[in-house]
Image (cartoon, rainbow, N blue to C red; front, side, top):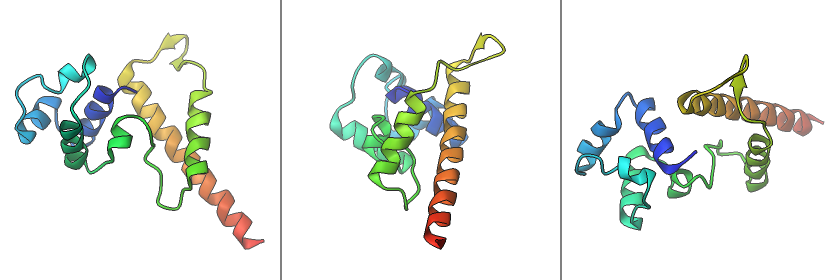
Length: 125
């Protein structure tokens, strides 16, 4: 997922459009859309991260939205697991980017749920 796709995903999660986010951040129109082709300054990246209450690493695709109990190895496990999947599709049709984002979020939830369940079972022994 690209930086712009993460921003669009986070905006939609808050019930906002990318244009709404630009306006609320005081950016000119299409500022965030330009991130499809350019890299933001460190200041702008930090502003966007603060706006969505995520880390700059998350925006850059360096970390997943992991639960507080997850270790760095857990995060690496998830990332490797998601990268190992074949291209996503359903009944012979490729999924669009929005659907891929939703599927990834769902898979992350499944992964963290199973990881926690296994960890809890190991702690009971």
